[in-house]
Image 1 (cartoon, one colour):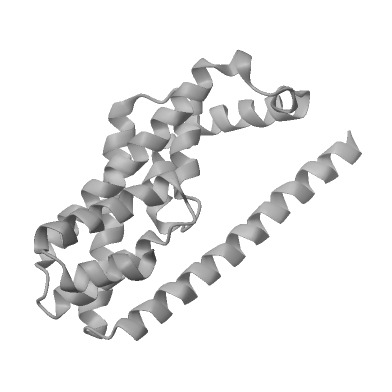
Image 2 (cartoon, one colour):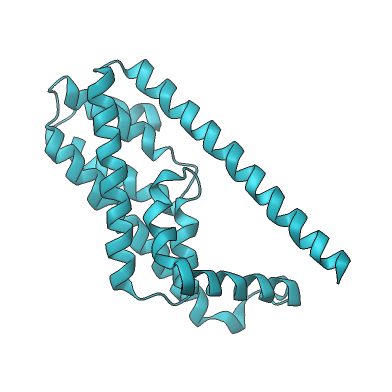
Length: 203
């Protein structure tokens, strides 16, 4: 499927190329394993080679990210409105404490969470689902999610023009960034879990 995306970007009609760029940015929020940044970087490489217009690539990436984030947020709102129908394992005291912690976190730092979402591959959708679960209104979701998309896509474009149209270099940089980010996330999660366990034993 990914190869078909990339082939259409390079050889298909321009309209469909931009539509696929936007779709890839949006689908990543609905199905996180979809490598939206791979499509984005390939589109940037094509823009550097002047096969696609950089402004339309940038707008498509940004619009797709905002739309996908809104859909994920809407799913979170739906979950919040149907809490009574959740499976029993999500209603345990531990799960409810975790949900309360998420809501408190968004009450205090929701704008920051959404503003950094694009910089954290594979976890982006969960930021918006959390915002929905916390009943964050649509306005801030659009604004701060949009800011994140604008900044991230500007970084992608800048990196693309810095290294030229070398697709292999772009992909290698993206893979290294993703790997480093995931390592930091795992370390942070382990640290949080260890803290909870330690606090529990002390209590």
